[in-house]
Structure formats: structure tokens, C-alpha cells
Figure 1 (cartoon, rainbow, N blue to C red):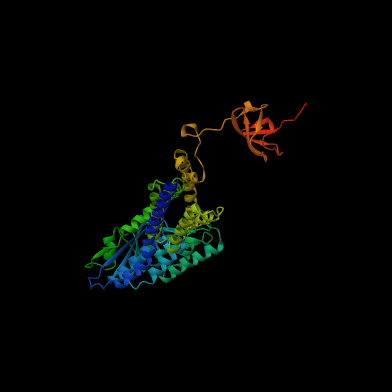
Figure 2 (cartoon, rainbow, N blue to C red; figure 1 turned 90 degrees about the vertical axis):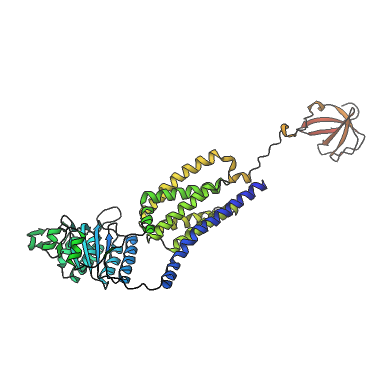
Length: 464
């Protein structure tokens, strides 16, 4: 038993150490970035390039962080121009506003090359650029506000705010603000005489590339990136494309809903198996790797912060403490709450994160229940259950029941106070009275036998 407990304690210590070893680099990454940037020597002057930055994914915090890094690198390279290669269906309004601020505040001239769709928040980013060039067959607009489920938001306050942002971006670059407003608010009609088109109330404006050029929402049509470079006078300058780094690409893969759900399932199932069925080691390692990859991907993508990682580490620690300290479940509940909170807070879409966590939890319960059933002899609860059996095979024998003594007469050889010893024939037997005192040498008779207790009384003298 002690050996088993020592092994379990050793496994817990290894598990806890590994968990903090996985999380510590993530917690320190944010501070180390600043130190590395401060220590990096200035780069030598290079030929001024035209920097191309792809905007091809959903607009969210991860894309925002990537664009911030890309604009910084373009600034350091003294780029003559930045080309935003846009093909997106939109995304988060708050991230789009931050990206729009980044684009319009850039000291480097920026041109948006729409070669697919600049829809919703994508159109807002394009409108903040100094110029817009569109590929034939592309489109811009349809910027109505929708929720996480894809349903159009009816809140007048939200619609008015986003419409004002679109109008401001259009006015900044000398474009018709009423068209930008009609891209957001279906209650705003607009007539575009340049293309002989009227959009009635109840409809949202979306422009083709040719229409955008005619109404002044694009400066030129271009079939490819080379034509865009020629349009901005970038011939003779090197064209440099800033792509997602390996870590950023990995983070984008990790933050996909089905991947996040799988990692959460591995994390919950692995840690639970290691806590309830100790001694394996591998499930605990897999569980911590699952949680570690989940938080790493969301941290690199810009969704998770250091506070989320710290909250997760606290949750793991509280769950481990619950195994060894009796708190009537209070510590365990706090630990679970910390884990759930950290997982949801670290996600881009909290509703989706809660759904993924729920599915992962249900699947994990099923797997853990199967493992506990198969390996029930190794469960942590075995420490609290006495399973030693006193069987004949192990040398234990039960005392015989002396039912044969009932009614027999003997003599007490010691005082019975009320227990003592009596002789029945040549056999000494431990007896007990019903509560009376019987002196030594008196005749006694056995009244009853209860297990190993032989109950006697003094034999009456003379006729009964």
C-alpha cells in the first residue's frame, strides 16, 4: 500500500512539473519578445521594396497581430508602398477597426488589391487604404453586421456605429459616403447614377469591380499583382511578400474549431485518467500536451493572454490538491471553474469555445468511464478501501461455535465477573454470565451460545 502511494505521489509530482514546464515558456514568451526586440541590432539599409501583405483569412485578433507585425517589418525595410492582397469574407468588427486604424495611420502609402472578395469587415479595411485596385470578377461591400451564428444584427445602435465607421473611411479617401453607409444599413437607399443603378431600402450594396471603378470606389482594374505594382510605380523595386510565420500557420491550424475540440478532449480525458487511475504516465502527458497546444495556438494567434495561462495552471494545481486534501469538493470545483474559464477566455469565439468544451467533456467522460471500468483495480479510491480478506487459504481460521455445550453442566474454576473460565469434563472453556457474579467452584449450566460467547448461569441447588 505504501509503495503504491509513493508511486502515485511520484507520478503526480512528475505530472505537475511537466505541466508547468509546458506552460512556463508560454507565460514568459510575451516578456521575452520585448527583450529580444530591444537587444536586436539595427539592420543595414536595403533597397526599398514593395511589400505585399496577404489578407486572406477571417478577420480576427490573429490576423490583426499578423498585420501589426507585417506593417512593422515594412516600416523597418523602408518600403515604398504596401499592397494589401485582400480576399476575405469579413470577421470581427472590433479587429477590423483596429486594422483600419493601422492602415490609415501608416506612413507608407497603402493600396488594397481586391482579387476575390472584400466583404463586410474586408471592405472596411480596403476603404482605409490610400487606393483600391480590383481584379475583374471581384466584389466589395455587403458589410452588414452579423452575429457569431451568421444572423444579421438588428440593433440600431450597433448598425449606426458600424455605418459611421464605413462612412468615415470613405470620406477619408474622397469616396461617396452614402454608398458606404448603404453597404451596412439596409434602411439606407442610394442612387448611383454612374452605373444607372438604384438600391432600394431593404437591400445592401455590393459592387462588382467594374461598378466600383465607375462610382469611384476603386482606382483601377488589374488582372494580377504585377499590374498593381506597375500602377503604383513600383517597377525597379523588389517585391517582398510577408507571409504567416510557421508558428502563426500552426496557430491557425490549432485554432480551427474541430482541432480545438480534439485538443480539449485529449486534455480533459488525459488528466482525468491520470488523476483517477494513476500509474500510467502517458495519459497525463497527452492531457497536458493537449491543453498546452490549445493555449499555445490561441496565444500565438493573439486570442489568449498570459492571464489565461496562469488561470489554467491554477486550475490544474487545485485539481491535484483536491486528490490529496479533503475539502468536500470545494477545491475541485474551484479548479474546474478555473479550467473552464481559462479555456473559454482564451478563445476567439466564446460561444464556439463553450460548445467545443461541452462536446469534449462529454466524450472525455465516456472514455474515462471505460478506462476506469477496465482498470478499476488501479483506481485512486483503492487507497481508502480495505480489501484484505481473512480467508482459510491465507492461514486464517474462524473460532468454532460451541452449540454442543448448550444444556451441559460444568464447574467454574475462576470467579465469573461476569467472564471467566469453567471446566466441562476435561475441557477448559471461556464463559460469561448473563450479568450475575458466580464464585469459583460452583456448578454452572450453559444457557445459550452466541458465536464464540458461551453464556452460563449458576445451577440451582435442590429440586427445581
